[in-house]
Image (cartoon, helix red, strand yellow):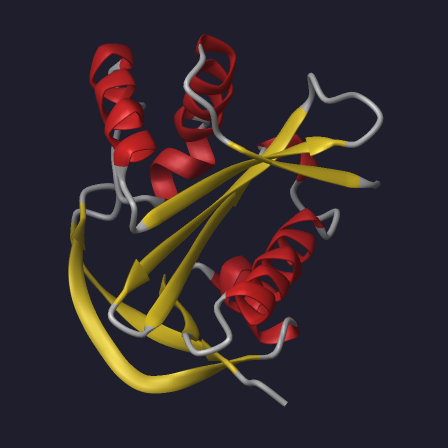
Length: 166
């Protein structure tokens, strides 16, 4: 499947597409929540994201039918690192969309932000994400942090994964 990556815009259609992605069961679960986001609060969050200079968000769509959103990508800039976060629509899981998103993100970073480290934080139980990052030249580092995940009702260890350049 050919994919198209569109930076989010200040319009209702993009807000709706991202809200749909962030409301799916798997995204709620792996983000650590127990319920889908409130639409009004999500709209406020969305508008804040549009104003941020340290974050870029893309919607990932089918090339042949741009009405079909299959995923999303966040790049968050902090110090000398770019942190990647992504999601894939549930019915497209297991079709290498996540891998294509991570590949696109690393290419963007290497082209436009070559001086930055490319990293991601992933919780231990999220084996699919771990495998996707490992498959795309990321390596697990020694950095860890603990974060409470309501969906698991406990603190979980997050591991840092860093892109291996070269």
